[in-house]
Length: 437
Image: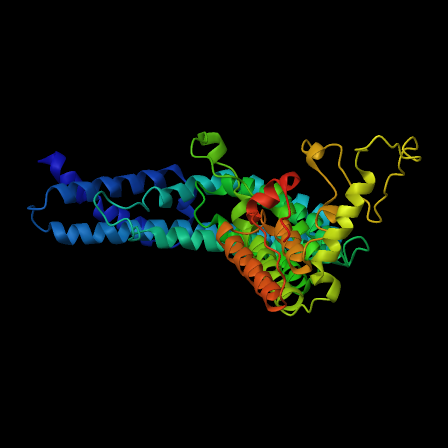
């Protein structure tokens, strides 16, 4: 009898303690954690003995007391953040600190208070879980309290850190080396933001378990970056600059998904989620300029007479081949002993020695010299963007380019045809051949 009745006897003393003046001061004590544990045991007992007298009344009151206790934790957590903010603001105002010192002060203050607040915050998190058999899309009973903790921390920390980040990004935007160059600005600003996000990720782990609410907070920290980078990307008119920007983001900051990643690697910052909007902006602008080129330089191209005079061009190649070919008769050319003067291209070809595929590089200017101009333009542009945009977008764009180029040649009576696949042409440029009729 005594064993069963004790679950009813907790009601009155716990009610008095949680509703007494200054009840928020007991949150940091060990007895508060024991009180919450007793409430859990009482609710579990009520759930397993549904036929007992007045069970529904006791269960509802215990639920209210548990909610009251967890709300006291939320109030204490919010007040602690306000104290930190007030202390930091007072120190900044009194000493006129620079940005580096302010950052160090913020880290020190938040690191010191993190362990104690994390311990009591766990009392909410371990109860903000879905019961067995619940709909996965539904929200746990106390998840709203956890969301309030995330929002309180994010708002407080953002209020202190964001002005420093905004000032730094503005300084990078006005620097002589990056004020007018999109890629230089992106390289410096994204590297800085990534460092900030890594520090904030580590600090978040000291305050919370898991990543709930984390990336919403980090996205807010990246707003100043996009305030500068997005307008520059949208107004960029050079296709090569956009290609460089896409390459920079894809090679340095985009991570490949690894299905067999270890638990240690899984618990790290996924910067790809934060920087992906910048890549989308660059790709969108790149596709837009590519379609503008398709319309203006290919669709509206008016060929010159020499573009269509393939018989004369073939005759020129035949004469050139006869002049430089081996002697087929017994007569020796008087100038055969003199080595021919090498032809120097007016457009130099740059070959990077560090590139493992450098031996396959060749002078594309010479390879495309006698191609129909619109086809040459299309091949050049597709070779720049095919690794930088989604494959479906590339296939659609390349189809439009080649069909438009073909229509232009047919309209002006050109007899040229190309039997080489575009992607194969780009991937295996040394094997390109032009078939002319």
